[in-house]
Structures are given as C-alpha cells and as structure tokens.
Image (cartoon, rainbow, N blue to C red):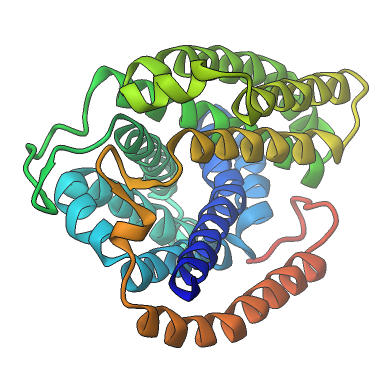
Length: 333
C-alpha cells in the first residue's frame, strides 16, 4: 500500500509540474508565436517586455517535471527518449533560440530583425514540438521487453502534426489573452481583435483531435465510449471556458479571457490524463510498472516537499512585483 501511495503522489507531482509549465510558459511562447504579426516594432518591444521578467522562471516547471520524471519513473525515460529524440531536440533548440533572443534583441540595432525571427521561430518550433510529443504519447509507443523498438520518426504522423498545430493555436490564444491583460492602447485593441479568431481555430483543431483521438488507440476508444464518465464532462467544461473567453472579449473584460483560457487548457489536459490513466508509456506500461524503488521515491519526495513551495513562492512574488500594465517607456530592460 505504501508503494501504491508513493506512486500516486509522484504521479500527481509530475502531472502538476507539467500543467504548471504549460500554463506558465504557454503564454510567453504564445507571445513569441504572435510576434511577427504585431502591429509595429514598438508593439514588439512591449510584447517582449511583458514576458521578460517571468519567462525563465516559468521554465523552472519544465526542469522540475523532467527531473522528477527521471527519478520517479525511470522506465519512461528509457522508452520515451529514444522514441522522441528528434522531437525533444527540436523543443530544446527552440527554447535556446528564444532565450538567446531575449537578451540580444534589446542590444541589437541593425540585426534586430534577425533576433525578432529567432524569438518568433524558437517559440513556434518549441510549441509545435511540444504538441507533436503529446500526440505521440496519445498514439502510443512500440515496445518489447521494456525497450523501444520503433523508428526514429514514428512520432511524426498526421495525428501528431495536428496536435502540434493545435498546441500552436492554443499557445497563441494564451499569448493574446495575456496581452489583453498586460497591455493597453492599440496593442491591446489588436489583441482583442485576434483573440476570437484564435479561439475559433483552437476549438476547431481541438474538436478534430477529440474526434480522432478515440480511434488512434483501442484502449482510449473503449474508455471514451464504454459509458458516460468524467471523460465526457471535461470537454463540456472546456466549452464553457471557451464561451467565457468569447463573452469576455465581446465585453472587453481584461482579466477573464486569460483566466478562462487557462481553464480551457486545464480541462483539456485532465481529459487527456483520464483517457490514458494509468498508462504512462501507452499502450503497455502503467505508472506502477514504470515506478522506481519505493525507497528512492520517498527520498526524493522529501526534497520536493521543500522545493515546490519555494518555487511557488518566488513565482507568486515575481508576478506580484511585475504586476500591472507594460508600457513602451517602461520595461524590464
């Protein structure tokens, strides 16, 4: 029973770390995706300044989730990394280009346009790679004897391309609602203008993915259509959040679109988890199969108990310090 409890605790910790990363880093990736379409160069300065104080702290959750996954569920690493080497490489390459662009763009003069493209391209590449990796997780992995036996490009299929595009649209929606919250004037008007089309795009792509997902893998199909469970309630709550975004944009409310978009992501994420639980390496291995020794999980849990509150505290403090609107004449740099 103790082992089962530790496995469940670590499943919650990893799941919490992943959704925190998606929400926190999602909106600043979304700002980068929207970067080439901004009204003017001054708007791009404001967009980058709106996320400059928080973007690197947001990625703490990626480190926490990745390190925790390696320590608590080592089988996941031994199978998923060989299956997703190229996708993970593209993800990290995108994050590197984006991170470098933050510092160099504000120093550059004649080469600023290059760093604009580095910021936008890195954000777009990272977001698409994340979505494709999620799609690969949904469709499952070919294994034998706890070893990945598929090819290097098995993760890249029409379904994973669609999930990559879906996350691109979703992050762009997070970015536009963040700009509504943090900016004013003509940039905020532009963010209001693009939010509804982005919301429609997200709903269309997510709807196609939702219809397609049950047919990707038999276990998912059985769970979706066996009976009326929470897995059908979560998409309904996602639609409620989408309606709240639409209504808030029409009423030009500033905070509600961003909060409702986060809710849209949370319920979609929960639906994904429910459809796959307890498989962490689908379709063969559950969280119990992939777990490390109970002694290792307990030892690591002691550290996490101290680390996670610290991360939450400094994240909250950062957002509090840099609260309010961002203007062209005031910025992080």
